[in-house]
Amino acid sequence: MPEPRDRTTRKIDLLAALTAPAADVWVATASPDGAPHLVPLSLAWIDDRAVIALEERSVTSRNIGASGVARLATGHTRDVAMIDAVLERSAGVDDDDSLGSAYAAQADWDPCGLDGYVFLVLRPTRIQAWRESNELAGRVLMRDGAWVV
Image 1 (cartoon, rainbow, N blue to C red):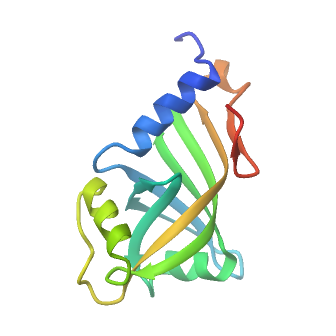
Image 2 (image 1 turned 120 degrees about the vertical axis):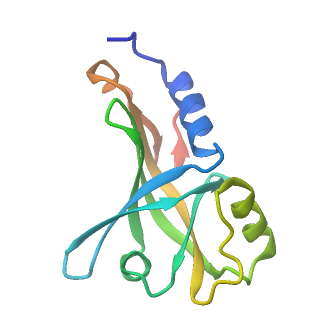
């Protein structure tokens, strides 16, 4: 088992993963009646926000719109980050040029021009990152929307 990273190193590693070209994220939501839903989506990390693009009428978009929250996961089981986030805003993919440009620059595709697609801008409220069990202590990097490191 590798030596545990300190929080500063974990944050550096996390931000490198979140800002990498063609980053992906698993997005977990729940319907108003509690039915779970999980999908993989392309991610852009823009100004400390997770930005995803999807069909406005998709289950994920409807669930986030109804509850205002989502949980995102990156990495694999031996190097994971969990991001609890709230919906800050949504925008049609052709309604915010700067957001669309920033998204397309990082993601592996450009949704602009696709009918019915929106960007959801998610503000993280809690972020945890760890590799092995020896990193469970100190895994919280953000609490109440503020970095603790």
